[in-house]
Image (tube, rainbow, N blue to C red; front, side, top):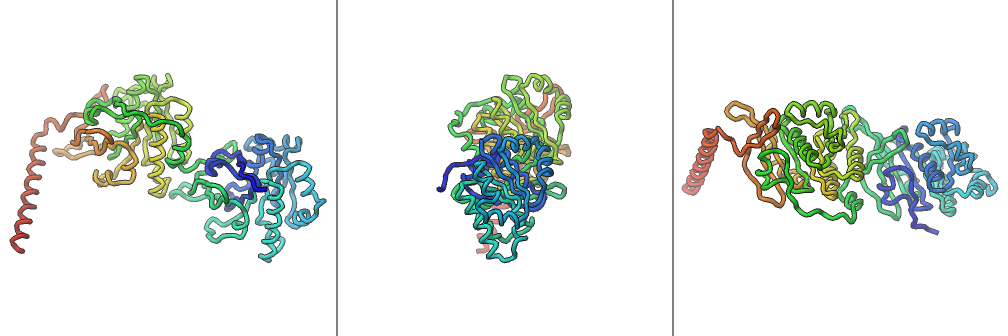
Length: 502
């Protein structure tokens, strides 16, 4: 009998990737190179079933001795011994030859164990060793198919591990035989960092999230962080309504006037610009103003430590320490060395799901982007962040570094420009042989706004102030106007000459 009931894996994040879990009675092939976590994945599946879901499990191992396996499991806090004593888990350490003979004998230990213990979950680690029985591919297929059919008839949910090379592209016959295929990998994401990934290659009869998802082996076992996608966040937030457009103050004098009256509550603002142009300072002023007015804030920082943030903020008269101590400001810190963007996202998700934050800052996306590798993945990541904050009516700012050669038009036409609600460009401009901090509103959805370039001033004790214009520089503005007139006349002259020539 084919079941459409889902079995929970008990591995955090995996059920989300599989959009519910594994179909009861299915056989799942977990592939990967050595060291990718295949055995740990299978053991966690068996342990969770026996401990949390009242589903006794059988482990068949061709590689490790039970004592070694149980010792490794204790590192994750898994008490297999007590479950074995309670006859909720049974371990058989054997060889492929003996295992095959036991399967062919109705009175063998395998069949007796399956019947007497009412086994619901099975782990076979690993099916690669079946190749030691025979090199004949036809015979090997018949043997594996016979095993899987026997397990399916008993409606046992089974995980089979299989070793494959990291770069292997060809398909194995087992992939065609099983109901689902999960590939684990350990790959470089830059010149110094490697990360584990999980990808569902096949899941017969059920939907799943495509693409690679981050996999971490933590102190309590495997945890998977699904690749953020706005569709996933929308489904998790079903029933939540998009808030009405309500203006809020940014906390930066002069900026609200540029924005046509202030930011909209729930909007996602991209602060893009040069390094040193004041993006982090603006973001801190924005979130501190909210916290000072009973709007809890979440500040996610990469590179700088919380103590560095507190000290540098104090230099402009922004004292964040009391806000942190009172709980109105939460600082979440990550270092670049072991940065996992997917983990960052789901940590943020967990925090905003448990506390009524009103404002949030992620500083910065430039540190996250290199670890995502593909442009489309980065766009989906930013879109998921926006969706996560918007569904909870959290006004957010995301900082992003631009190359000095990047012009504003490139930013406006970029993929992430479509995702966010507003874009503020903070640039360092050489004006009269002085480098000046400037700000421009490139996008403000649903509102009229100041289209000019405005000067930024940093005042001790007051922080960032946006001026109404380049005050005190009339000659500079007149020169810009003159250049515009000269260019216009030159173009008209070229058009006239072209008409005469014709």
